[in-house]
Length: 185
Image (tube, rainbow, N blue to C red; front, side, top):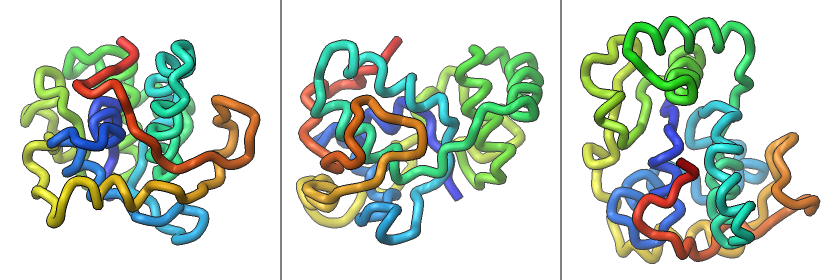
């Protein structure tokens, strides 16, 4: 099972991002509510980390593309046990709190690898889990457009509790105009 950092999900939401295509290939083509399969796990803190900026800026297409990816993850709570593990990992590896929570979520969920492009904080020195950078993932077969098209037009139920708007469903993916690693930092 894979666990995801925010940066690679931003890449995956960008239709022509070369690393995003590799990450997107790890996601099931159909909505989780239909297929029953998820791409992996992540911390529930991915929701505000990914959606705050595009929501604030009113860029609904970005919100929709990122929400479609989040809906295909098993989002785990940042509970006390995760916070304690994050504290230990953050102290050991000198991580910022949010990065420590993402890593702790991956470790506590039993993920096989943590996919991130943050090589300055997550290198081979991390012992608890295999850290995989998106450039190490295989290049998907077929044109990049087909990778984006498999999300387009489908409907997905929102993850419990996350609602950038009050609608019950949303388009799975739209164009993400902010290519080049737009994040909330």
